[in-house]
Length: 563
Image 1 (cartoon, one colour):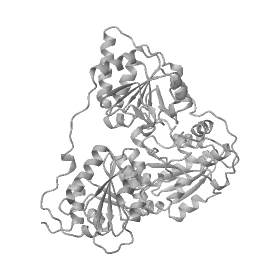
Image 2: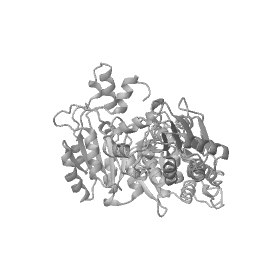
Image 3: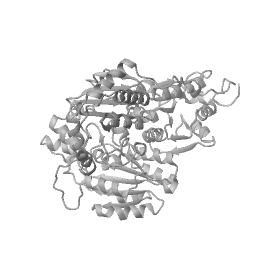
């Protein structure tokens, strides 16, 4: 035996797995491990003010870096605090390893004792109870292997007293990366590929939708080539908004967040091909987005049923890039043989409308001293350079920032699958840790007032660590989704309203800059002043509560069930 304590052996194993950042809230059950991991060269430790925020920040870090995110919490209440952040990461398919202490195995009484495994597994995450000193490093390797292979959070639970026992192995640690099977890119079945080509050649109004699988496989250029070869339009799922931002026939986001022009185009589509996309309820807008189209799903693991609906009419099992390239080759072969695609959906007029028409053309009466959130986002979009990171929170306000233009997918971070508000500030922390640009950081967080106030304490973390983030709070002085639904039902909405929360003053109380915005004309000058200095800043932007996002209008029209 090496004689070193297990907590140090665990930290060494995490370092061998390539850990370069840990997001922590320290307690009895994780303090020895966190300090031991921090001692490794190249590991940055981000101490946050709430356990939820540790896991949420690690989620954003994993997305921004394409690495396994690492968080660390103590046992009992430390573990229970993360049960909102975990399902958000599960549904967004984010690989995380969370080191969680467990209550001491041999204590007569411990007031934080709780059965942690069922709490974690109820969120969809995996739980590994690391109770064997002999197999402790095997548990670590298994946690990382599952996180990487299945793209899912894994919680590693290690009893507090066991961590201080001596390590039982002298073997060198073999990281999970050495065990990951590399079978190459999955190629499409020739028969299924032929059917896909048949459908693409005969479709008059085809649309290709790229999803997370397309981004991960590097398939964007191949999908563009396939669209150009067949005359198809392009679109994306919300998590990879901007994947085709520079293509003149890009419709933007598919689903409930589709623009007016995109929704009109999808309604006319006779074929939709989803590439590296799981075709969720939201991508299909509950089945309302492209009701007249035949649907093809090209994915590494297509499913016949997704979110209670038939996913597609034809399934092609393949890696997104390999499948798109094979389809391009087959289309080009047919064109060389004299066939011509039937598509006629593209036009200069449509390309012009995509560039010039607003995403939502509905008119609203805006009260004095308030601004239209659509105008706010348009002004921010014009002012902030296109290579800056845009991080978004959830809630009613999230629709508006999804319509920003000309921004690449790898600079736009949103995690919306669980519908949880309160994550935006934590996600911005994770991106700031990933970029490591100090006082020259180029990150904008767009969040609602309700979500911002849920974890406002993390402003102290931003300040303490010297991160610079521009935080734009779209403040309607209420929970926006709820007031619009209550108003539609004719019910008093006063309990969903907060009044004029002094958000800029609160920010200054944490030692960061704060400004009140009541006119979009202020934004260019405010941004120049922000960019000239090195501190974080919060803009309290008083938006109108009369402007209802089209997603909410459709939800109300259909009843308050699923959006």
